[in-house]
Image (cartoon, rainbow, N blue to C red):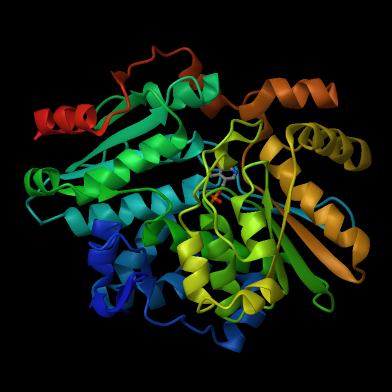
Length: 433
Ligand SMILES: *Cc1c(COP(=O)(O)O)cnc(C)c1O
């Protein structure tokens, strides 16, 4: 499989280049030259397959001949060593729990697969790789954990000072070895801009072997396709249309769901659920894309003012907004709604949902109220313990912090403080070259 840039379809690169460069030289995002189609026999058998098995069926198309099937398979078993159960809240409403990985957020899927892929490609290249990643919270910890101790790869995580939760910050700043946390004076969008600027800077690319680990990397997106197939396979009653609500920020998760649909999985409609950072909702409603600075909310991993994967969605639908609207709805909810959503899910189903999942639930509930004969899936992107205070306030139920999260809370924070200007970042990175 070859990959093109969303900004230039005529220059194709290998899977390896797409994974190792992260972003195309022209600033575009890599897309596969074709969407692989799953055999109907595979789709019919999804209910009997494990996540690594499903992963293999999907990833072998995207990786083509660039990795042996044996290597791909073993890499998938290592990366996907946790579950993604589909939980019934009712006959109509299901929750796809994506928080069973080491950092308790769905980003573990992307980060672990990408880390294994890069490790595979960097071996024998004789050159150290430096990964820059901007995080609004969960990306950084998933990436840090995925790459922790991986030989030949250094990871620099840029996060906005004071804008991630205590637990998130501890997850980012308590690893050592090849992981460095950069605490940036600014917002997530500033962090993302710094990373983008670093990639187009000639000095930096000449002196450092740079790559990205944001959701713009195609290797983050591919493993996110797997769990949509797994969720479809888990549904017993296949006679009803299936609607999937995805709590969205940079739109990587939603884009992966759309890939699953385009690959032939009968998922009928996607809802991109947003908080008040609703640039995507506006785009669906008005066809105008108007990025703006992000605002802080309870569902902070969705606080994105310039969602990068929109470029991929537009590309996937050849820019045809009517086609996009046939497959995607989008609704937005504020923090007060989010709190109500957490309460409502607990009161109706005795299920404890996190603020991101709550936004997904509200959007799904809104759609289900007006449409019959459907099965709805809420994608639950984070463990509620990561947002303990909010969730406990609304449910009145005490949440136990899972052991793998509690472990980092007692460790000492280590970060490098930077002022948010590109020059400071550049100077710092050049010092590492
Ligand atoms: C990153 C994240 C999101 C948003 O996902 P995108 O792929 O950026 O749209 C939602 N919820 C949680 C918990 C996240 O960490």
